[in-house]
Length: 166
Ligand SMILES: Nc1nc2c(c(=O)[nH]1)N[C@H]1C(S)=C(S)[C@@H](COP(=O)(O)O)O[C@H]1N2
Ligand SMILES: [Mo]
Figure 1: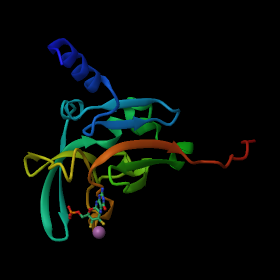
Figure 2 (figure 1 turned 45 degrees about the horizontal axis):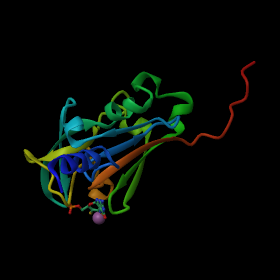
Figure 3 (figure 1 turned 180 degrees about the horizontal axis):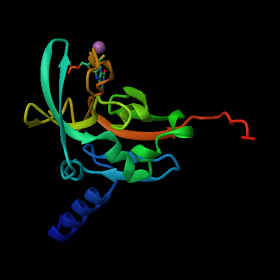
């Protein structure tokens, strides 16, 4: 292949379907965003220590709500009313899924941080754990700590109507 053809092929690959290291976000009204590992790394990080079966780990990552704001999820003060029936569905490369209530991830509602980690013990997550891992501070066991996260979706589940005020 000529260098120009090679360069074109490489560019097509890079611009093509989401790479293995990408994170796909879907918002409550169908908004979609794709973030690379570098995009996530560039966002403000917080630290969470987490005990996984007695193994104490220092994670660093981005607060989940900061990521979800990019696809129109409500900010802290707006997580009330009908938004209390909104869930966040976190998906991993191996098909593992974890759902949490949006309010659970809200720092204005709960003190426990909920982050999408990209570092553990000062190093980027290994390929079999990364590119991202859900970390829910103070969970007593690591079942919700989805590894290999590559998608996060916000879904409004509320179906009931409240009676009109009178
Ligand atoms: N993607 C993915 N994440 C996952 C799981 C899984 O099967 N797939 N298992 C969970 C469970 S049940 C546990 S106990 C922990 C184990 O993670 P560790 O090996 O880092 O302790 O990962 C959690 N995260
Ligand atoms: Mo587990």
